[in-house]
Length: 253
Image (cartoon, rainbow, N blue to C red; front, side, top):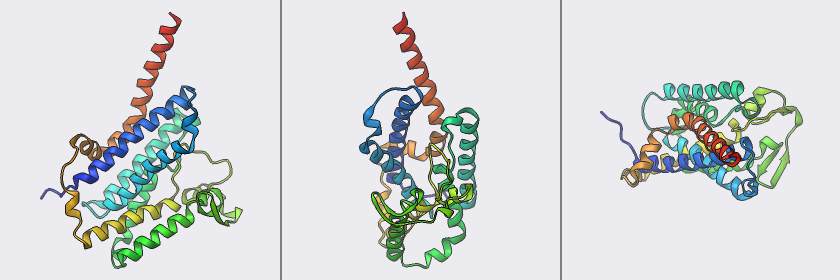
C-alpha cells in the first residue's frame, strides 16, 4: 500500500529549498566571488537564513512519525551529512562543513528511533511547551550562555567547551569553524517541537487539511529535497563560476 503524502508539507519544504538555493547562491557570490553586498551581512539576512533553517528542522520533526524504515532513513541522512563534511574538507577546507544541518537531522531521527515509544506516552501539549521552552533557554549555548537572542540568562562553564564531542552537542571548542553548524543542542528541541505538533494534529484530526495539492512544482521539489540539497551547491558554484568568468572575459575584451 502506497504511503499517504501530505502535499502541503511537501510544498512548504519545497519553498524552503528554493529559499535555501537563493541564499546559498548569494553566499557564494559574497564569500567565494568577493561581491560586495552589505545587506547580506545585515540582521534581515540573518532572519531569512534562520527562517529557512527553522522550517527544515521543525518540519523534519513533524514528519518523523510518517513512513517506515525510520532507522534506515536516519542512517542515510547521517551518511549524507558525513559525505558533505568529507567533500568540503577535501575541496573547500576554508569553507568546510562540520556538524551541519544533515548531521543534526540524522542525529535527531536516530534518537527518535529509540525514544519514539516513551515520548508517545507524553501529553502532546506539555511536550510541545517543554520543547519550545528548552529551545529558547538553550538557543545561545553555542556562545557560552543559556538564553535566546540578546537575552543571556546564565553563563556556562568554559570547561564545557572542550573538544569535538562537546562541539557536536552544542559547546564548540576554541578555534572551531564551520560554514554550516547546527549542534544537537539547542536544535533537537526545535525538532521535538515539530514532533509534538504532529501529535496534536493527529489528536485533533487536522492532518486531513495537509493532503490537498496546492503548487505542484513546489511539492515535487519538496519530495526530492535531500537529493537537491546534496547537488545544489556544486551546481550553483559551476553556474556562477561560468557567469562571473564570462563577464570578466567580456569586460577585458
